[in-house]
Length: 256
Ligand code: ZN
Ligand code: FE
Image 1 (tube, helix red, strand yellow):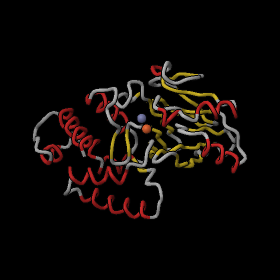
Image 2 (tube, protein in one colour; image 1 turned 90 degrees about the vertical axis):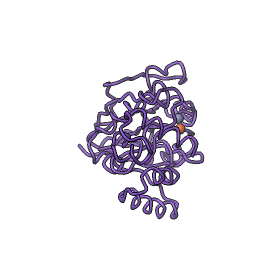
Image 3 (tube, rainbow, N blue to C red; image 1 turned 180 degrees about the horizontal axis):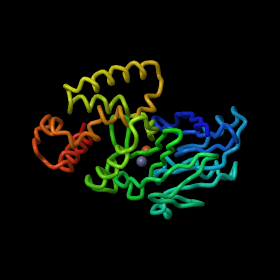
Image 4 (cartoon, rainbow, N blue to C red; image 1 turned 60 degrees about the horizontal axis):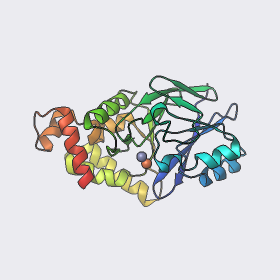
């Protein structure tokens, strides 16, 4: 089976919508359509219809285009079970371990509460692609609007456990500012310094820094490194619990 073709559609000020296509049978799906227009333009350009809309969580900048796309294409909307009352017109709700098929490929649903209470991610093992909304960002993680640091850390660990070559398609282009923050936490992390330079070059060309990989994030993203003792020492909290270190990191980033 061929991997899905994945297109990155920039939307609003810093959102990314992802267009997925099984090239063998033409099935298309879209992840987190903040607005309908860029999706319609991309589908028309490629001569495609739209079968599925996948939502990671209820925030408007991830579902704002649902209604218009469903009306135009008759697409089925799939989203988190526990946010059913907060996402209008959901056709199918899913939770941990459920499967979602896009053409010939099946994704596993991973529950990742913390940013919102019902947040989910979609992992496509054959395509080696993870759509993680506002849970894990390149060099960052989402704000804790509806969860505790312990919940978010547990969610991030589920994602960190995926294969290193898994590509990460997150909800926003926050990478450059995340890199600046990460360097304040781990100024001596050579892999991070090198990555930050690459990010600056990519953004200078106006290109997305997405996707990164789980392997890269494990080496450079402070929010996946809250259990690394050298990081705990670096933030002046040697020997503290990992959740305490994670909460400290998230708090510092909120004030950054
Ligand atoms: Zn959000
Ligand atoms: Fe968002």
